[in-house]
Image 1: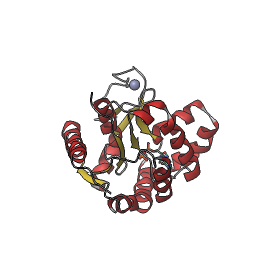
Image 2: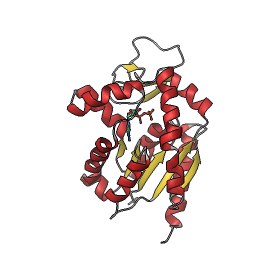
Image 3: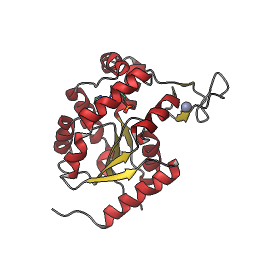
Amino acid sequence: MIPGVRLVVLGRQGAGKGTQCVRLSRHYVVPHISTGDMLRAAVKERTELGLQADAIMKSGGLVPDEVMIGIVDERLCALDASTRGYLLDGFPRTVAQAEALDKITIDRPLDLVVDLDVPRELVLQRLTARRVCRDCGTIYTATGRERQPWLCDVCSGDVIQREDDTEDAINRRLDGYETQTRPLVAYYRSRGLLVRVDGVGTPDHVLHRLVTEIEYRRRNPIVG
Ligand code: ADP
Ligand code: ZN
């Protein structure tokens, strides 16, 4: 039996966190917990959370820490996450969220925090071309030669551009990443949990790098 894993994936918008987490989630048989996906589902279902988050997300801002911490705390208590582990994608995004996560996971601490590194110029290109299935979240890259309407290969849902993938909102999110989320790199490095993984390359290459790092860390755990 392959052991599970408890992982946080950091990285700029468009670094490929979502794509890699889907693959890692199959590899390690642990849930991919994406706060962005959870919020988008809430918006779609028009829940109270969704109504609150909708405008914030469109503008490229951040949903308040207390709200996000509550959602993640609840999700990590579920049986799958509490037994096998999880891949956290999009959380924590602020130091306050990271401190809250330390408390939530005090009995089962994180194994590793991966900083998936892709230069800003490249993520800008990727995000402008990013399309996503409205129904199942599968991510595609537009070439401009797609048939319209563009239907998802997995579920036949509509493949669309996310409302916050406009140039303005992308730039605002990337700036927010530098000021609010980048400090987490130092936060986790000082705890000996951080590994930087080069996110440039094909999805298969990047997955291979990730699994290699995770397995290396498993064999050489940090003590103390
Ligand atoms: P991206 O990383 O491209 O911004 P996500 O899908 O991770 O995309 O998140 C989309 C939006 O959801 C964010 O711009 C933000 O408004 C909100 N969001 C997601 N995760 C968090 C979080 N941990 N804290 C606050 N807001 C969040
Ligand atoms: Zn789909």
